[in-house]
Image (cartoon, rainbow, N blue to C red; front, side):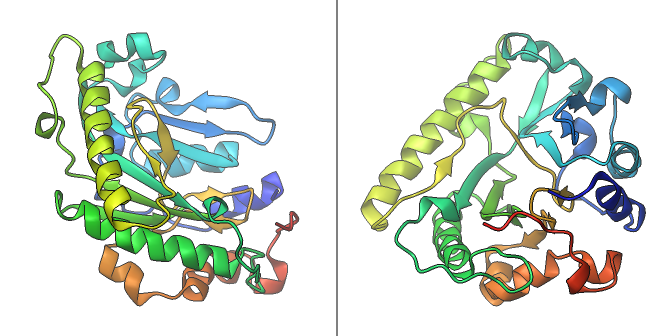
Length: 264
């Protein structure tokens, strides 16, 4: 785990990123502090854009930064699932997690500067590409993000609830849940038919949260870095992905100063 001062330095020495694919001001955003407190940033500022998020991260130096998969008209109202409909969901993405801890029996070879298993992440990369190809049969707007740890997130930005269920305006959260369940079942059937080992976490819960791209994962010292499209992922090796997610050159001045302390 990185020191709080080191995390703060990362946010102080980087500019707020452009998170254009996401409507960040529509997201419910939470951070986890070093003492494991969870702070709802929307309770501090009802509309959190990239600039406001970076300012709050500089203040709190969080270990993790999360955003909702749903977009809300009033993100500050998000709380318990039973109350979420009063925040009025106005869309949201479908997210698939592909993590290397799901793949067993792989010879471990650690990246020399990050202690991440190259072989494991390579398998996660391969399955992410194959799964993205499958998702592209239904949707075009797909963005892939390196999680900053063990794998990748596939964000399906143009996921439409009405593609999979009838939308209930009186209970929009339930509609989102039903649509995600049906799409998950659809993907599961395709996975069984095409993949030998379908090890993925498919998103069903509309109340789930996911790491905000370009924020720092203080547990590994790596950035949850935006990769781009499936083609962009195909063009990048695992070593390059890990190097680009390593903030040490720009923040601490050298790889030898990377403040990682937990060897995995």
